[in-house]
Length: 444
Ligand SMILES: Nc1ncnc2c1ncn2[C@@H]1O[C@H](COP(=O)(O)OP(=O)(O)OP(=O)(O)O)[C@@H](O)[C@H]1O
Ligand SMILES: [Zn+2]
Image 1 (cartoon, rainbow, N blue to C red):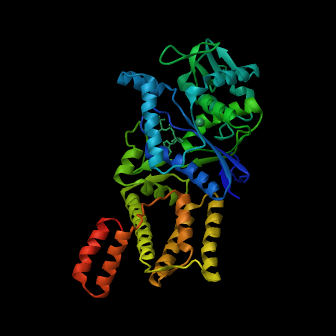
Image 2 (cartoon, protein in one colour):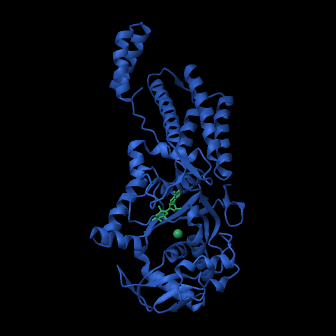
Image 3 (cartoon, rainbow, N blue to C red):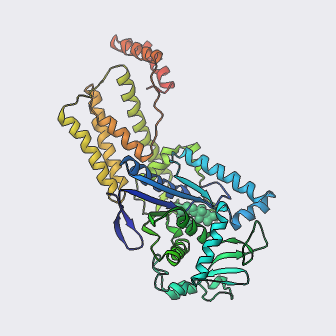
């Protein structure tokens, strides 16, 4: 069974195989997403694809934060409506995740569709005395769950309270109390019994998880920068409402930096997903993530990108080679493989599952793929392929690495055969002309 490192307890938690509930905090749609934002999305996608491969049922929810100060500010800046901004960048987001070969989550919910539920949720917290209203604003009282609050980010009460000193708000009971409902006269607002206002971001995610799932999550996924205050605040609201932990495992991806500088919008050093894909490709980004431990910080460099390009080219070329060799019967696809060979390919899948079950050890999977690639190359030389190729493709699929291998039609096959014949007859000059054409067509 899949084991995932849980950041709350510091233990690897076993994820129950019957049905797995996953949540990832989605984008605030006021800009295009950058490759740092793609890391948690690719991590979640890896878990989803792996569990699906194991025939485990997955329920995966992703939110879209389409109510936020950043959206309002952008709308003012561009002199368009908030709706226009949210629509433009939601569409761009869906485009990006498709291009990243990310399987669409079971459900993607824009938070603006859940305002009634959010208001109800906040009312429950007030009724239960975990939240209080002052002057149209509603705050969570962190002293009401003193023991639990701070456990995720491992902070003491004093630290939590001093952290908020910069934005000292004299309405609050404790300086660390955070806002659930914010009274506002700026931007889009909704009527609640407290004021015209907007929900706080932390409440959006807590509500969605509570509203969509009947049980707590198996895995909550996100970037490490969201642990505090966002996830601490999500967690405490869920505990207040349900008297239960929100998730069995909190899985965090390490932060991405670029040339040793933290990648962030404020520093202006982000690489947008769409630009990365256009320049290098989606596999090229995925490989960089897969080849490192997801929990570790990662520094993107030119060298790392080049290494990824090289690796993907190697795999692509191998798949192309096997494809045309099989089509021209230059190698035989041996489905009646001797027991030993079949055992070999079966063994690869067993190892793959072992590595993945162990907290998604993808760097080991990459090493395994390299071993398989060597074996496939050897088999091609010997003109007989066993099921290793099939398993190799299945693993690439789970990893979300996708290569455009063209089908070889009758005409192409004839060309290939002609080329091979010319080679056999040592007519290298003519063979070269055909080889070039086949290369240009992406066949070999
Ligand atoms: N540099 C990064 N490396 C890894 N993950 C990141 C990085 N920046 C953001 N994330 C992750 O992307 C997801 C979306 O977060 P968020 O919307 O806060 O992104 P952001 O780019 O930091 O935006 P903003 O600058 O508006 O706060 C979160 O899971 C967050 O942890
Ligand atoms: Zn969230």
